[in-house]
Length: 499
Image (cartoon, rainbow, N blue to C red; front, side, top):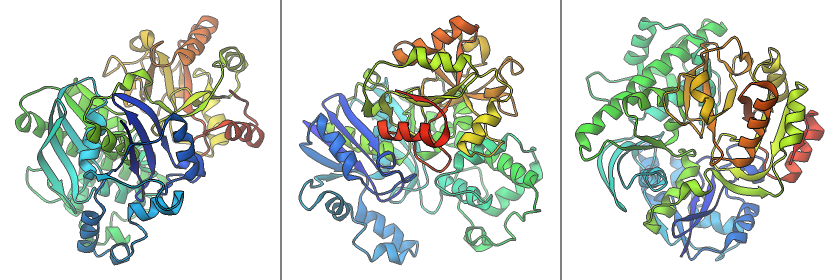
């Protein structure tokens, strides 16, 4: 049976098609529409999916009427009293009435939990979900065994770590539910300040040893009253707030995970999902305490399209067959020789080949690459991508050499989910952040044969077993998806993209 999972009308809409234990297709709407974090579904995305088959069953990633109940409680009356935001109506508006009918609805957090558990290497595991908000849940802990998931604890709206982090993102003048990773990058430039951390806790968090907390709306931060963490007008203020917000966030995440052994004593395995699981700095702290950790490379809401389908299918998915490469397919041999030639010249060079990555991070199939040893590479990259100068770039390193260069918290990091200190930051200035850490992607022949061959060839020529890897896009735009996007990138930005 082919099952189509759908996520939409929140942020970063996406679809996934599975059959038994196979993931046939999974993609993001934004790659087709060109609208970053597009919340609407896209007709061309469905047409691309249909080359892999048409679904026998359609599943949606949350329960819309329960969500409306929460919106009513929150006073979001414009959302409550419109019917255009019901998923079936939206689906009909995109595809035409009656083309696909939603057969089942799965709870938001259950979709998250299923997305990571049913793609994991485990058949028994605890599951942690931390996000902004589902219908009501904002954090949940589950016990998964076989094909069953049992919720053992949850925290509900308005007590939300994810919403709070998004609020802090907005307080720093960034875009909430999009720029949280920029706050995470800014944090390394800030100065630890216990007094500021205490102020953050007193302003936003309830007391006590439990992890229960809430946004304190009465102090005006959600309405951006200047009394909330008053701005002194300097860039350093932003960096310092970011650093201490990140510290508090890490502490709260660890509190959640430290509840797991008591709530789920049956196993040491943990699967993790929800948008907060994209915080790779915090992930590195978690995995040091809980080494049997699995995180889906698309843990945010778009990944829930895969989760709801997997839950209804009731079978573990063979995720490692294709890894995260599940989207639009640019056919042809991986352009190893052409790309290495450009790298040896010191040029920035793009790759758009094979199936697009499912998730927010480019892993070699829609990547902008460079020599990590170049001292001026960061500046060149930031100019091309129109990014802030303080933001870091990631390395893709041959798995067998990763531990020679980085103090890795895990053996593998094939989906760029952890940061690690670089042992030789002076040799690789382009991929080291201000604190000498890097968000590492390890690459093996099994992960991506073409990309592995490219890095291996670069290593043979230079003695450097890695390349700088950033997503093939410009700030505020989606990652390149198809052949047309790749050619337009070359024309517009003067960077060769090989496919």
